[in-house]
Image (tube, rainbow, N blue to C red; front, side, top):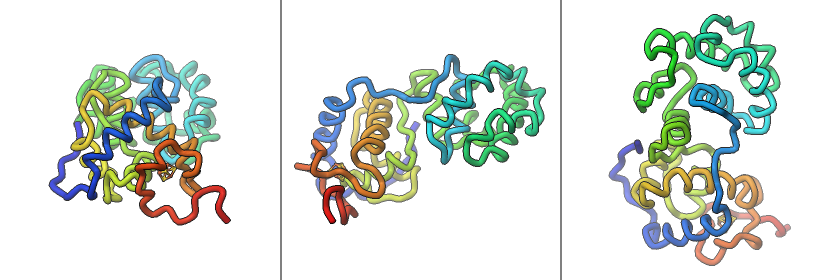
Length: 226
Ligand code: SF4
């Protein structure tokens, strides 16, 4: 599900979108989430933990966490203080421990211990939001969805696909520009490009295969320049 908007798209965005998609398909043909999980519950927990933290830090912590708390039933019996030692290497771990304990209880109370296959139900879980719901539904249940994190938002603006800063509005713009069956790929590929080339502080425009058509909105000092 994408957010709705009637705001104007940047000039040239509709012509640029297919060029962006083709470039990303060449660069990252196998783009997928880098979070490690083996079922929807693990994906939900990993996604909640990944807020303002790296996937690497989450993947380092989750094997021990899932060994101790393999499902919602087990985690629903935990107090936040039980979870904290297992996730303390991840940013904001105290708040995340509180959210995970509450989330697991809610899964038991309302959803029979399963991660709901329903956007609004996932959004309503503690520590979740549109981004989490989109990540979980797209990766666990195959829903077409675009989860807008800091990389996706930044690249959408630099590439002239959206002028919005609100993630929900960026999501809506991307949803208007790209076919539904590309949304999940687009999300993962933009994240990879944002981590490897179009990084926040000094994007490597001279080495970027999209430099020929990218308007580089807001980029003042690409890598390699003094
Ligand atoms: S040309 Fe520069 S601003 Fe545009 S996507 Fe590539 S690295 Fe980012």
